Length: 390
Image 1: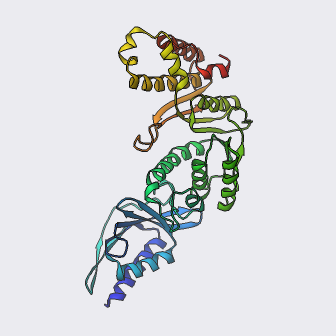
Image 2: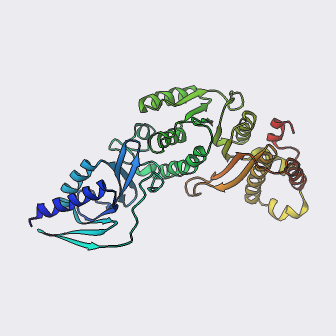
Image 3: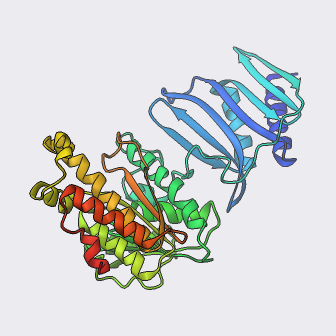
C-alpha cells in the first residue's frame, strides 16, 4: 500500500468512527512544522449548537488553542498534516486503536483490537479543556484577548484562563435557575469580559437562552459594549448606563458583581436582595469601610496579636467584611458559600460569595452572629446593614 493510501485509510477510519459514534480520542504527535512551540494535538467529539464537531486542543509551550472542526475540515487537516507535519497519530475507538507512524518515506498503520472501552460523552460537559473553545470570536479580539490570527495573545493568557474559570463557575449557576430566559445583571460591568464570555458560552455551547445586562457608570464603555455586542451577534446582551445603587434591578433572576470596590459590592448585594434574585454572586474588592472601624474601634484584646500587624489587619478586615456579608445574606433568606474562584496568581481579589435563595436557616441566629462579630472586632455597623434597614 502506498503512503497516500495509508493516510487515506487512517482518515477513512476517523470518518467512520466519527459517523458511527465510536470515536473516543484522536491524538497527533511528532510535530515538525512551522510552529516551533507546538507540542501536541488532541481531539474529542463534541456536540455544539452548530452540530457535531471534533474539538482539537493545540497545546503550545505557553498557550492552548481550541478549534472545533467539521468532519470535512478534519479530513483535510489530517491529510495534509500526516503527509507533512506530524510523524504519528493515534485513533482510539470503542473497538480498536489505529496507530499511524511515519519514518522518513515509510508510513505504517497498526490496528489493535480493544474491549470494554466506553464511548466518550460528546456533550459540552465532557470537553472542559476550556469553556470557550472558539478563539476566533469577534469579542475576544476586540477586547484584546486574541490577535488577528485568532490565537490568544501571550500577554493575555492569564486573563483568558480567568475568564474561562469564571464561565465554568457562573454558567452552571445560571443553568440551575428556574427561569427559561433568566435576566442577569452584571453590576459595574466595565468592559464586559464576563458578560461576553458568559453569553457566548450559554448561547453557543449550552443552548441556554439568557438576557444579560451590563450596568456601567461610564457612558463610553456602555457605548463600546453595545457596539461590540451587535458586531458579535449577541442579541440578548446589552449594556446600560447607571450606578449600581440607582439602577432598577426589578425582575432580575441573578445579580453579579466582580471587583466592585468596597461598599459598591454591598450595593450590588442589596440590589439582588431587594429584587428577590434567585442568585447573587459577588467577588469583592477593597474592604475599607470595615477596616477603618476595626482600626478606630475597640476590638477584643485577644485579637491584638493579629491586628497590631498591618498585613494581618488587611487580611482580617477582608475576611470579617465578607463573613458579615455572608451572614447578612443568610438573614435575608439566602444559602451562602465563600470560596476562591481563581488562583491568586491571576488576581489577589479572588474570593467569591455565592448566595442562592431559599433554605437559609434561622434569620435571628444569623443576626445574632452578626452582632457578636461586630462586638468582637469593635465594629459599629456594616454598610450593608444600613441598606437593609437592620
